[in-house]
Length: 246
Image (cartoon, rainbow, N blue to C red; front, side):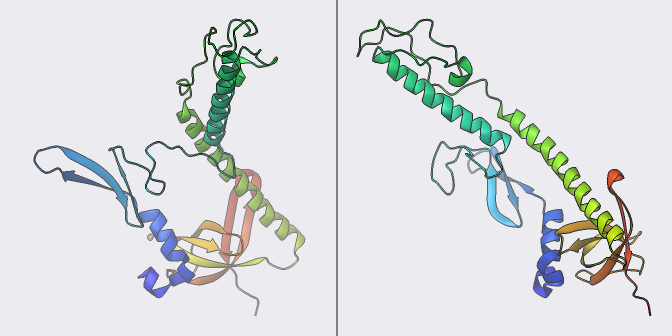
């Protein structure tokens, strides 16, 4: 029981939950018929997903969207742009209805739709004689593109992060006369036959697949590992157990 024993200071339980507690599909038969509904739940969370239209659990809103993020994901920028274009169209419609001219330099990209064919300088204030801009949601926006770019950027981020971490190892090996030793915690076994484990370096927040050179290891076991070989360009890293000289 990883949680009860607090193996590896809780790191083992967290790793196990992320790796093995996959969503479970549950199919329930509705009362009074053969119709079914499918919900998705996870063992590590009380949240659930359903094909039925429901309001936001926390906000209680029927209509909502994911608005922003500190890292400014592509979908966040898409939402920002859509809201800004909507507000601009709303303001242009106000100018048109009051017989005022549209500001120069405004482009179709700024509005998300074609510009009015003429200026509104000849219209009578308080009357609408010019075609008004639509305030409907922009149908051409494809948020799936943003999701695809996010997945691509995550791969690039992981590879970049891995490269510079390995470069850190390489530089420490070159600069230090003594062996560079790191404390590591065994999170779990991923190949029992080959005695391959996942170890975690708390100092670096780094997980790595480690093939044991001391036989079977236990969940939460603390090790002292050192770098055997490291090649950042090829993303190659090999660890070995640290054995202090007698």
